[in-house]
Amino acid sequence: MNSEPDRATDTLQLVTPDKQQTRVIDPLLHTAARVLTFEQQRPLTNASGFFFERDERLFLVTSRHVVIDEPSKHFPDRIEIELHIDPDNLARSTGFSIPLYRDGESIWRQGLDTAGEIDVAVIEIQRSALPDKSVYRAFTPDHLHRPPDLVEVGTALLIVGFPLGFHDALHHMPVVRQAVVASSFGLRFQGEGYFLTDARTHRGTSGAPVVVRVSEGEPKLGDLPWMLLGVHSARLDLGNRDLVLDEALGLNCAWYADILTTLTMR
Image (tube, rainbow, N blue to C red; front, side, top):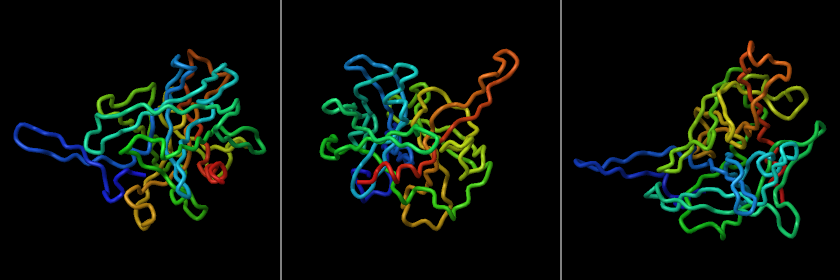
């Protein structure tokens, strides 16, 4: 949640020689977090994540392969996220380190289904450990898709993240890529717990929220009128694609976000 809950939006004051202007920052951008992985002090990879809140508890959500990936021998022991620490000056930020193991046991939660492991990881964050005046926004269970809500093939989506680590380095803000639903939403593509998106994505986007705009009639969502549909995982490709003759498919896997209902239970 925003450290200033009474304000509908966060604002950045830009001073010009003639007058002061106010730029309104979309709260959606404050839901995303840049995730850096480390093995002790050695930097490993860049990734994306986002905040999720349930029953007054705060979680960081990212892809499971960000915190551990056996095939690539990726075994970080901590991650670091970047947090804004001044609601009136987005240029001020700090790194917040989160250990991935406690007493030799992993602290993240991950899911399994009949097809195997789900590429989503959830880490609970103690609010008391966060810096004072931390500025962030969090999705809630109200933002998750409900069965009566129709999501059609071709529905326009946004993916909010940090492709290749790229972002607004001055204001520490993510970038947004446009996407569309590319498979039947609600069906498990190839029997897996994800759907497909058609979007141009890159490494570093893993763990980013995949959202769709809610037009109206959702007062519970407040000033964050977005439905959280999925967690971006990876680009989908064919093993038999001719690298010379055939272009990449441009398709991506997004794991259904309703897994967060299970992973954030007490």
